[in-house]
Image 1: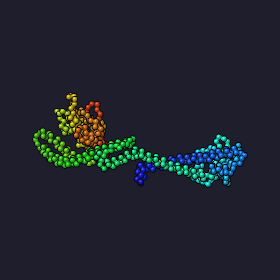
Image 2: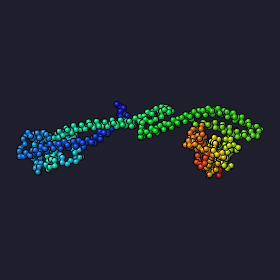
Image 3: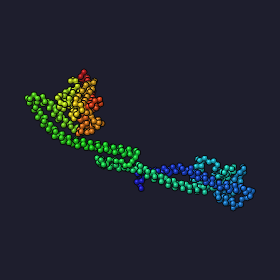
Image 4: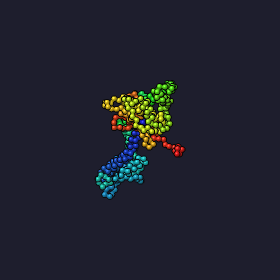
Length: 476
């Protein structure tokens, strides 16, 4: 039983009972006032009927037994009839010394009737009242003098009947509303709550995603949103698990890779002493590549643990950096993919050289992979990667454009999102995610540019560092 008061459905049940009873109280006041007026009019009508008969017996005197019967029929102590400006006593017994209240039933306003009814109901009993009113449509007026005991007794009985009837109506109404609300709202809400509890226990279980429970209207919309949120949460949890597994795998691979690269670095150092001109030309590039790989392995876990290291900015010749990217990607002039550089030889970018290299390398590598797998319908189509850069004031704008198939819709919708923004099957999308993080670390922007023709174009804008006032004065 206490659960009925604590639960939403139980509170709704009892609140309905209370509200219906309050509504019945508002109805009760005019209702009991109407009952009182009808009671008094019935007594006047009975006395009026007897008065007309008695008036017709004039000048005969009414026998005492008839007077008593008339008074008993009306419950009055005195009956009088006013006609033609004169008043005649029709019957009387035990005439009271004084009258406490007088009521004219000819024209009684509703509020006055309610006030008199409440007064009789609460404070009545043992009071003498004089009641008078017209006889039908005639000019005769019938008067009664009586106690209010019988009236109050009938009013109390009527009130008890009204209370009982109101209570029954309120209970029936409450039960019907309870059953309807329980079916339309309470049961679906309980299903939602139960599902959230079960889902919180094992959020990775696809069977625990909310499937709907027959709800309609707003609750159905809530159920759909809950289901979509749970599906998205499961996808996120799966990605987080993949990231955790990937981090563990990368840490293991990184440990062994550093040892292997350290050995390769020691052996490559000896290539400098070889007299072969070709070896001498490739040795510095090989050394730079291995040094860069060693640096990557030292910082490879920073993406999963926190953020990339802060850029160590300096003036970098962008044309030389793009040449390194071209050589790492092995895009020779005689190959199937052209690599075009439209860069002034003296253009410098205020950036971290290694991080800028990773940005350009990641995007160009994605373009090279897309072009390698691209087989255009027109044999004359040239597969080309174009890197353009120019300075506008204190900002360097870099554009990387290719003539490939362009990015698919899914990749566009999840652009720069790790593990979701890959443009090729089996890709992770980490390249663009890392590139964006590095560009933002430089205070720049990176965006996919819409172009009229086929292919993909990215624009990167990197601003120079603000000049400190002390540095400016020192240089001046």
